[in-house]
Image (cartoon, rainbow, N blue to C red; front, side):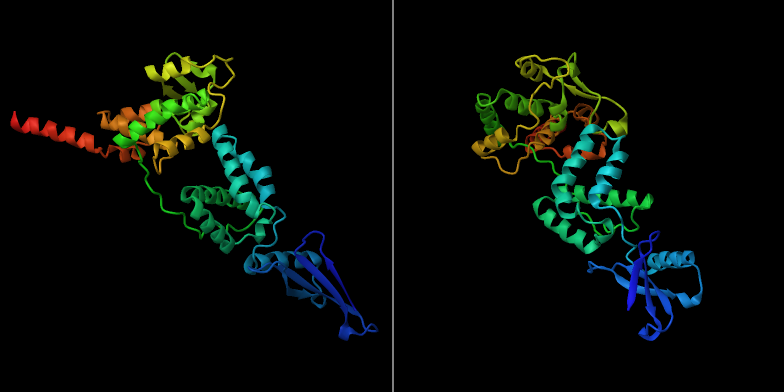
Length: 357
């Protein structure tokens, strides 16, 4: 006959009391075990760490258990699920980031991380699980998989620092290599895009205006979605809360050319706190446009690439172009320095004139 008890101060310490030789006429003794959580096992193994005949205190056994798990175990059993870590701890550490960044992180967590790991204890999540999830997500979106892995890695790093968990299963996982994307319209695609855009105007004035402003200003989709009537200052939209605010500390200026101003002036004017475009994402109209124009592999964000490429190919240097697009790093602008065919032909003519005159 035996009795089993878990210590109330160290739940990883288990005490099993028996009679010597299982004879109830003999005295009892207690064996102390550490709960050891191992990869691939849902339930812990019990590892013997001591016996009452040693005549040491319970406090000593608690410390022995802690040290044993720290050295041999899977870092003990975390009391936090990943959901608890995200909502109760990690989100609180994001206060310095912009509202847009926080929204993006929350959306990515709830879409691609929470369904897989949200209800699991952090100590039960291991590297093979992360790798399997990451590979499946990569099949759908390489960049999105990298972003989600970064979120998960940052969560574990923070929780380790706070003592909530003692391992980071994301560390062995390597991100997908970054692929520079510089997709912009060919001359034929540009003609087809303009025709599809004109047709889309009759479907939704706000979706049409949204896409037109992305095309004409190089602004990010999220920037235009949050822009309010009160943000319009002269010939610019000035955003105080934007993607790079926590890094630059500066407002983001979206400069409006004549056509962009005409698009905005065509919309019903709202109150200062109301958004200019009323909608957050014109995706349905965009996808219809791309299908009708028969343009392949062109994302809405590529309008930003197209704007930057047009600037560089028209003769603007990358510093002036970056000032319009709001790019922080000039290194990220260097991809747009590759001239298109039309620019190369013009440059050839310039050199020809220099050589012959």
